[in-house]
Length: 477
Image 1 (spheres, rainbow, N blue to C red):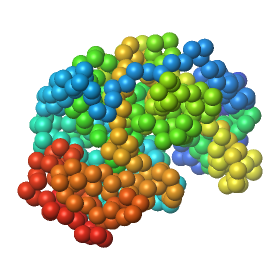
Image 2 (cartoon, rainbow, N blue to C red):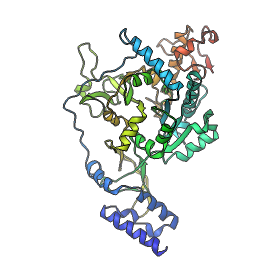
Image 3 (cartoon, one colour):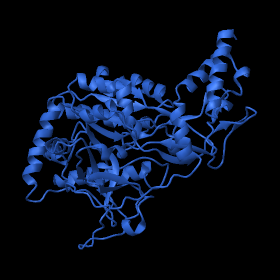
Image 4 (tube, helix red, strand yellow):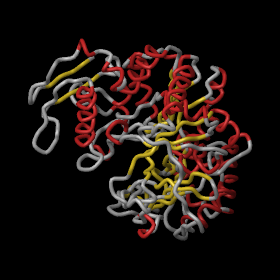
């Protein structure tokens, strides 16, 4: 080790000591020069002053959520418009189609996850998701983008936010699959920000002797990552005005939706959301509310049960709208909040974090031992001057794949995908077999190239069978 390198380490050690984090360098004299450089790079990526405040507020103590004094239900556009909204929906859909054709819309998926909870080795976007063809999630989205370009014209650039844990594997997947049929110049991959993990005393954990235990900073970090990665500059260069945001685990998402785009544009909104009617008042999704005249999502764990169960005069739950992480975001909004500096609230998560102990031995904890901090995309909603909510049919647009089994699993998503395709066929006059409990007695898959929605499918009635047989597998592509 040269004197200069040794001096640099001692300078960093002194800096860390002022922030009570000098334990990070306890193995610095026992690792290679390359490992020392990696460790120093990790350390220099930290904003230690900011971390001090976060440790005090979120790590050494359990943060307390202060319920707003007044919480109201927000206005929403319904799934089906009544007579007063029918014309507005028609105009909005036409405007959305024009914006797509003019190249004013970009696609943005948050894809930093790995398939650990699915018992899958690889980026979550590479998980096989469709009922018959087993297309991976990235392929589903890419085909939807290509089909939308063919239907409405225009180029829809695709921005994919990865994480340090899966970026290289995601790059390989896109390269090996020829960018899933998209023009490579219209696809941009970039990584999200990272945050260190802490023990409950606020000390940063080491994943290895030469690496900090780091984790993604949450999907709320996507707005800053767009800006810092250069993706936002590319979006502006292309003349894109609207960014369609979704998370990688939802194969059912209608990621290019003319109606949603048009309503957002017609109302001059900055950040808008899609919502589902909760299947249960205590369903574990965020709750759309109105606080200080701004759309605000309150987590299910923070909304008191009496409010969650509160009903209006018609017997409907007052806070019935659930957040499903589908948004439309104006480019100008992302520019504005980044140029003026913004900070979303941090959320604490107690997790099992693998680490090396004071002897340098790896430890795999069997219960939560560490604290991770992350931000959530929905916390940007109150920053928007105007925000709309469009209620959607859960079966049509929300079938997440999060767990290996049970709720929000690959199997539950498969059932919902088949149900959606069955409904499309039934609306076009095709007889679809159903069991006594109403479940579809067939396996159906419809490619985005054949139809993006029920309306487009009806235009192809001449290509459809009159009926599907019980137990039949059918692919339309």
